[in-house]
Image (cartoon, rainbow, N blue to C red; front, side, top):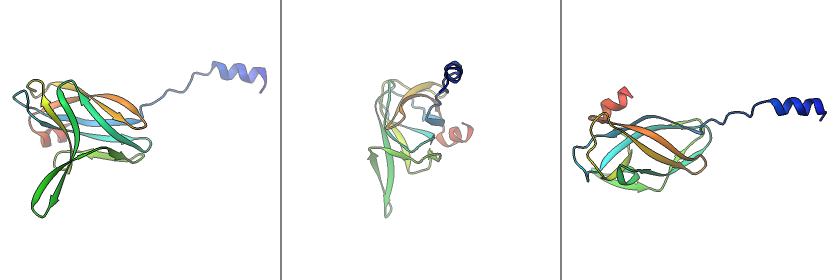
Length: 145
């Protein structure tokens, strides 16, 4: 490489690093009392294949990925260790679907309109802090987000 070309390349700014996962429709179900368990929802789009491997929030003792399964007429809640995110595909954890984030043991009541930050941990993309908004009605909140 010539000295002139090397000097020119050294002046070029480094490419900006974009977040690997986009999070939309981040909502939580409001709760009138501390200690409650509430559901959270979000739409996740990853630029490369990844896995959501954990969540946390200062507002709750624990946050889990839950899947509702049905065997005949009975519904059961299964805690998932992770959630697969295909490359460039939108994965919706939304009201009415089999998936939700379960916030267990709220530390304080959560009123509609409040914002709380959840940290989503991805196997490849690392940790991402995401603001979630509390809503009184999850289905309506999802439609408006």
